Structure formats: C-alpha cells, structure tokens
Amino acid sequence: QKEVEQNSGPLSVPEGAIASLNCTYSDRGSQSFFWYRQYSGKSPELIMSIYSNGDKEDGRFTAQLNKASQYVSLLIRDSQPSDSATYLCAVYPMSGNTGKLIFGQGTTLQVKP
Amino acid sequence: EAQVTQNPRYLITVTGKKLTVTCSQNMNHEYMSWYRQDPGLGLRQIYYSMNVEVTDKGDVPEGYKVSRKEKRNFPLILESPSPNQTSLYFCASTSRTRTDTQYFGPGTRLTVL
Image (cartoon, rainbow over all chains, first blue to last red; front, side, top):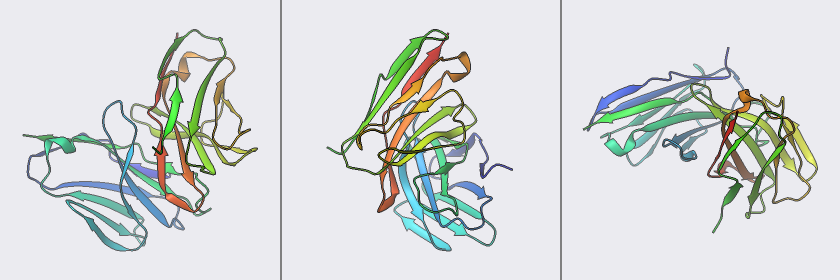
C-alpha cells in the first residue's frame, strides 16, 4: 500500500462547477497535510495546509481532514480554466516534521470552458 | 528575494558520464531535499538533509549521492547515470521551525541517453 494515494485522473469538470480531489494516507499518526498545485513543467506551489479534523477554507479552496478515516480532500468552488493543473497531496509521517514529506502521485484536473 | 535555485535547468547526457546538479537556497533553511518526478508516480524523495553534514536516504536513493558541506548548498551527484534516471528533478528547502512551507526550485529536466 502506498503511503499517500490519489486518483491520478484526469478529473474533468465544467467551468463554474465544484472540483473534488481526494487523498488517503496510511500512517495513522500523521499530523500535517498539504495540497500543492503544479502546472505542467513548473514546480509545485503550496495552496492549502490542514492540521485538525474538519474544514479549512481559503477563498475558493476548502481542505477537509478526517483523521479517523485517514482521508483528506480539496474542494475547489467555481472552478476556472486556470485551475487546470495537477494537484498533489502531501503528508508528514508520524516520525515528525523532519523535512521528509511524502507525496501522492497527483490528480490532474481539467476545467473546461 | 527568497528562492531556491537549481542548475542546470536542462541537461542531456550519455550513460555513465558523471554529472552534478546544483541546488542553492538563500533562506538559511536547515532542511533540504531532492525529489524526482515521473509520470504517474508523483514526487518521490531521493535524499534529504536536516542540516550541514546530516543527510539521509529518501525513498529512491539508488544511483544518487548528495553532500551538505554548507548550509545553503545541496548538490545531487549521479556518478554513473543510466537511462532510468531520466526524469524531472526538484530541490526543495524548508525551515526547521516552519516546516509547513517547502520552497521548491524550478526543476532540472535530465535526459540520459
């Protein structure tokens, strides 16, 4: 079992719709969770971090964490063509924040005008 | 400007010819990492370093070496490159006290013929 798993997609949504991206992780003791956005050929950029169960909202983005189910998701409201990118879920394992960040394989999102 | 720089950005080489990819950060970060990214596999950590002279293997260290003689620099060395090391490489750094934000370099696209 991979430590961090995502559906690679592509996930295709029409402009203005809600895009829902999902991620599961295997280390039950993980405490820190991140979503990165990566445009083709570019480096990843952090868009959301979440540490506690529940929802965290930032503009059109909402991160959701359920530690009991070992599940973290990202919702993008009012999706725009500029949101088309690969979204990477990342987790710090239980061993702590040592800089060893574990990434999922990424989900490609396509927002169609 | 806070940044992570990598050189070269693009490299085409032949099997067995030793090469070094440099990485430098100007933020006085303790932690630095090297990742490789391949289609469908996400970002996989090669090596990471928690401080000067402190390095450890990531998930895919075979065929790579690193050194951390200075805090700002973390070069990646391929002693005898092989075609399966053709990939997109990213260097990243983060502060020991603010591990929620990883700063990524622009990437190095390596092709080994």
